[in-house]
Amino acid sequence: MIEIGRQVPRRRNTFLKLIGSLALGLAGWRISGRIPDEPKFVLTGGPHTSNWDFVFALMSVWKLELDVHWMGKHTIFRWPFRRLFTSFGGIPVDRRNPGTLLRDVLRGFRDGDGFVLALSPEGTRSKVKRLKPGFHRIAVKAGVPIIPAAVDFGSRTIHYGETIWPGDDVDADAARLLAFWSDFKPRHPDQF
Image 1 (cartoon, helix red, strand yellow):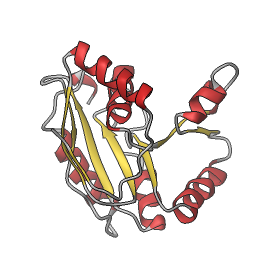
Image 2 (image 1 turned 90 degrees about the vertical axis):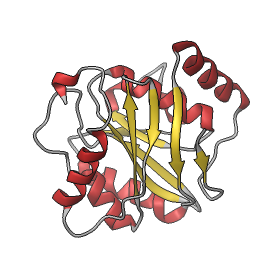
Image 3 (image 1 turned 135 degrees about the vertical axis):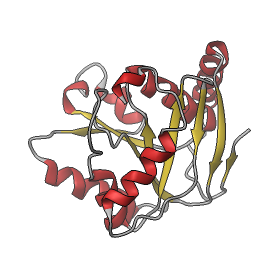
Image 4 (image 1 turned 60 degrees about the vertical axis):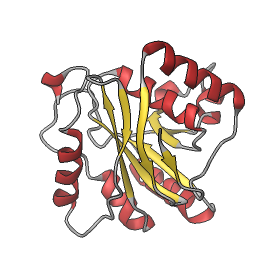
């Protein structure tokens, strides 16, 4: 079972908890690890090689009743899904205007008592040579820790890892994330 700190923002919703629990249970998935007692953090998910990564991660968030915000391409936030996605914590990203995104995300960290931003530093399901530095930039500017999460298709487990407090070296922190994820089997190993 997973341990969740008392300060972690929660979104109590019996219906979504039931959906997440049923979906994970029927698919044979479980959740492990620990989410530390932090009211604000960047939740980094990986390895990201399939759309199923997002589905299983979202089901774990619903099962655990976490209040998590996530970013998606602005094109998916169209009718009839816009209202649904934003109600589930979605933040539309228009890559043509990235400065407003950082400002809006930092406002979420600054203005709320609790705020969790989930993202994939790989930025794509394809193989990458380097993680995108946005996860680190956001954590440093917001003054919050990074909590890694892994979707392991080998053991059918979503695992929440140990806290990473971001330092001055984005490459060193990215290497820590990659080392954490290397212990888990992605859906498409050749893309990690």
